[in-house]
Amino acid sequence: MTRVVVVGSINMDLVTLAPRFAEPGETILGERFLTVHGGKGANQAVAAARLGAEVALVGALGDDAFGEQLHAGLAREGVALEHVARIADCGSGTASITVAGGENHIIVVPGANARVTPAQVEGAQSVLSRADAILVQMEIPLDAIEATLRLGHRLGKPVILNPAPAQRLPVEWMQLARYLTPNQHELAILLGAGANEDFLSLMQRSPAPLVLTRGADGAWYRDGGEPAHQAGFKVEAVDTTGAGDTFNAALAVFLHEGLPTAVRKACAAAALSVTRLGAQGGMPTRTELDAFLAKAPTV
Ligand code: RIB
Image 1 (cartoon, helix red, strand yellow):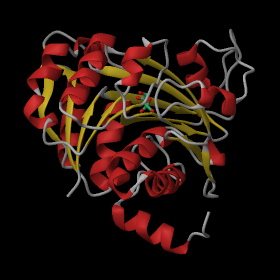
Image 2 (cartoon, protein in one colour):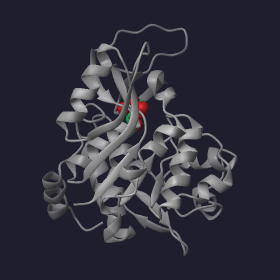
Image 3 (tube, protein in one colour):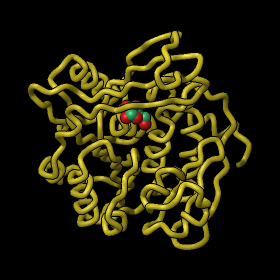
Image 4 (cartoon, protein in one colour):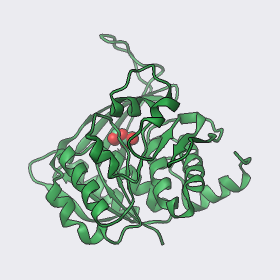
């Protein structure tokens, strides 16, 4: 069984479905409100577990009711939570999400996620040293991200850095990652590039091998040679929240099958994830993914 360790955030997603996005200063009536479990770290952990991996999460929750619910949800998914800290007198992370026309707007308040420390990451060394792949995103403090990259590298483990939400990072940190997995917008921020630069030229400037996600267009990847393209799988999008997380999880789970296969399976898993509401709602099981791929045209 593939072992994946995720170092990252855990949020309660406060989701409003609306006919469209409100303009600044405008009030509109929404259609439905729901609370669903999310956070990029937790989402990637759940997606990897559903795909059949043995998964441990390193992160932090508050001592509030959301913390209880999120902890119970992750435990139900079979994610090992020994390295998830419970922070006293602190709220759990939240994400206010508006979904309209299959797209989303998200504002994250980190709460306990801001209390993940380098010492906590180093304290998880025994778990990290047994991992086949390590996933880290950017909803936790930068020093904890750096600690994950350095420790993973020292242990000789492939670390996948999903730079979301993106901000500029030292080139040396990025070079510690086995793969960066930005979308085009995130890659431009990482490189300090202009908004109009073509994604293929951005890819050539990446300081580390990368897999660039392109939504419905699938993904481009580059590991040394020329960039290669994996087309997207056609589905009816209901909610794209968590698609990137599903992609990253599948990439980690299937990395041992080689990059082209892992990217193809990641695109398929991400496509399935957008067909249902909520970040974790549409994440496929291994059986669902296999059935989808068996019927899908060869793209
Ligand atoms: O990637 C989707 C996630 O981003 C949501 O679940 C939300 O919590 C934010 O972290």
